[in-house]
Image (cartoon, rainbow, N blue to C red):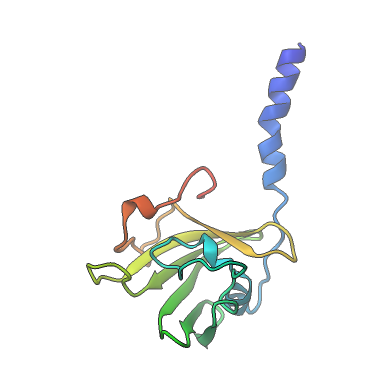
Length: 155
């Protein structure tokens, strides 16, 4: 009986922890993503090279060039590299976004991925994972398949 209780408790813990995500705003969503996205969680073919203690677009010197409630374009001022983010679907505690960037590989084709963004606590950063969920408006383009980090968290 103790073994069964232990197994049941272990099975319920992930479900209980999964419900601890902070709610996402309903207004100015693109601006919120630009300010709160931890870009170190973007696929390596899209994000800038990691630098110590830098996590957000602002830390890396990116500025928001164009935004509406569902789309934003951030651009690095020194290099001119751009990352385009479109909100595809938003739920109370998570959102799916389409992230597109010019090629950083030798092939020269643009790179595009669907990411699931979650906010663990209200004062933290949005964390992203590549998603298995497909959207017709955001087919997977370019990049390396080894770059994929979709897993059980990938949504």
